[in-house]
Length: 462
Image (cartoon, rainbow, N blue to C red; front, side, top):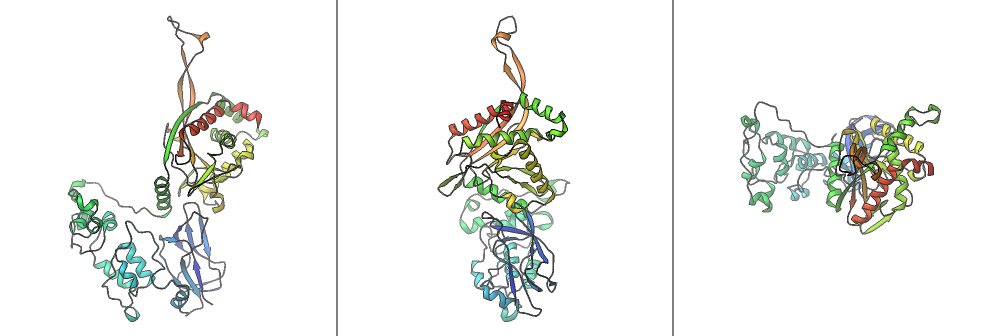
C-alpha cells in the first residue's frame, strides 16, 4: 500500500525545514529504515527514513527547498502504483503540495492560477521563479501544466537579477535590461510596470528608483549574487521575527574580573586530579548567571501571546558559532549543576553543534540565553532575543578601566585620589520591554556584575 512521506515537525516552534539533499531517486527500491532525504532546521540536521519497504514513486520537492512541516515530501509504494491517486486521497494534489517553498516578496502573483490544472512540481518551480501560470498551455494529460512547460517558459524569459525577481508581480517584461549582459534589474521591472509597487500603488510607485549603474560602472571586479537559503535563511527569518514581535531594549554594564581571572588561572595550573583545568571564563559566567536568575524569575521566562510564563529551573541557552550558522544548545537545570558539570555540559553541547551531532531536543526549551563575543574583541553589542525568551545576556571583551584609589592611597601634590587600572568585563543585556521594565532589568544586571566581582564567594557558597 502506498505511503505519503511528510516533513516531520521538529519542535513546536519549527514551521519549516530546508530539504538539503535527496538520498534516493524516483524508482529506487527502499527499506523502511532507508534514509530518503536530509533536512535541516535552524537547530539541527537529520535524516527522514522511508517508513516502509517499497519503491520511491515521486519526489515532490527539490533539494534546497524550504518545506513547511507536515507537508508531503515524497510518495512511496509498489512499483507502477499511481502516485497522483495517492495524493488525491490526502487532498494535496490540487497544487497544495510543493507550493509552500518560501519565495521572496509577497504571495505568488498568479493567485487565479491555483484553479488551473498544474502539477505540484510545476507550481513549485513557477512560484519560486515568480512566473505567472495563467494563460500558459500545458502538455500534460488533459492540458495539465507540467514541470517541463514551466522550464520551457523560463528559458524563453529574459534573465533577471535576484532583486528583480523579488520585485516581479506579473506584467509584460522587456526583452533586455540595463544590468550585466542585458539582465533585467529592479529598475527595469518598475519601469515596465511589472513590479510590486506598480501593482500596489506603494512606495515604489511614488518614488521611482534611481537610474541603475551599467556594467561598466561597476569597475573591473566581479559581482556575485548569492541567494540566502538553507539554515542562513531560517536564522534570518527568526531574527526578523524576533525584532518584529517584541519591544527590544538593551542595557550595558561592566564588572571587575580580577578575582575571576586569578581563580581561573589557579584552576588552569592546579592539580589535574581536581578536574578544573579546562574551566573557562565563560563557564564561570554561566555558573554565576545560573545562580542569579532564580532570584529574578521574571527574567527566566517566556512571553507567549499575552501570557508571561516563568520557570523555577534555569535551562540555560548557550549561543555557539558553527559552520552551519548560530546554534543555541541548552544546559538543562543549570541552577542545580556544579561549576564542573556546567563546564562539561557546555563543551559537550558545543562540540555536538560544531560536528553536526546535536540532537533536536538539545536545542529546544531554553529559558534564558547567554551569547559571548568577547573572544572576538567586541566591547559592546545588541543581542537579539531568542524568542519566546524575554532576556538574553551578551558577554563582551575584557578591558582595563580606571578605578579610584581609596582615600588612604592618595597620590600627587594636590592630594586628590589617584587611580589604578583594573580589568573589567562588559555585559549587554537585551530585554523584551513589553514584560520587563528597565529598572528591574538593571537590578538583575547589577546582581550579575556583583556575582562576577565576588565569584570566589559564590563558588564557596555553592
